[in-house]
Image 1 (tube, one colour):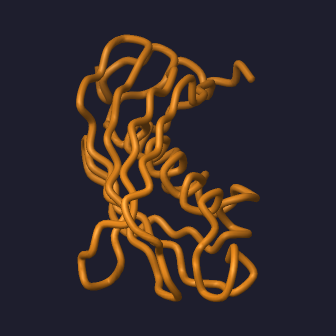
Image 2: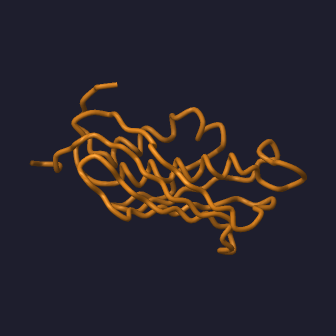
Length: 147
């Protein structure tokens, strides 16, 4: 896709995420978006379990990937195109996520002209860490809003 936009990356993300098919299917919501930080949540759904009430690792990985994408598009730059993709992602499962909603907080570690490096922590409502991830996104060049 090589479309251009006059919207900032953060405005684009706020419109894109609620319409994206996989995050919508998983119930992933964008709860907060500010420069270099994104908070997302994913409700517990018995359809997304491995066994009993243990949330499937693939659903958690999708939450991490989506959070990494959201923080990549959290700045106020106007993208030259709407292109972007995950080029690398690692996930560490720290504890089983059992029968509860999950929260992901993504922060930018480094932003270059074409790449964004982020870290994501996934917790249960009480703050217990269940997974963490590292995401590298390829994102096209941009200009600062208003200039």
